[in-house]
Length: 115
Image 1 (cartoon, rainbow, N blue to C red):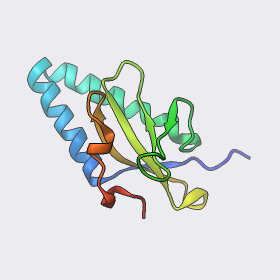
Image 2 (image 1 turned 180 degrees about the vertical axis):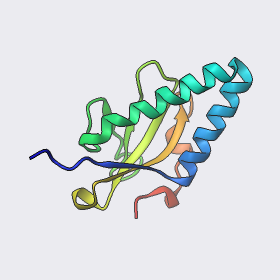
Image 3 (image 1 turned 90 degrees about the vertical axis):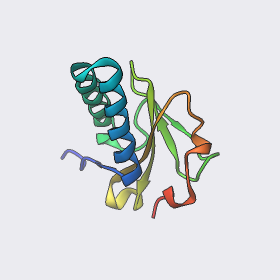
Image 4 (image 1 turned 120 degrees about the vertical axis):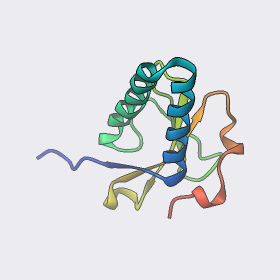
């Protein structure tokens, strides 16, 4: 029997980040490139089907308990994530999507902590 796949949920702030990334990329590189880049970012989320400790993630509990970071290949952005409800709910919460030049500690609020 195959284990249950984890569900990925974008927090409101992550959805806003994604919209801003799409707008900026569309303005700077055109709609075709923006669509391709957003599709690449969203496809990278498939790595989480097996859970928040997926290959390529880094533990960043130094910033917030349970926080992990993923930088998709060929991407200039990182996902800040945590699992919500432990292993029973099997939900990964993408808190933010930040450019690699941004300091994650400056862009996480206490409200971003998992419920």
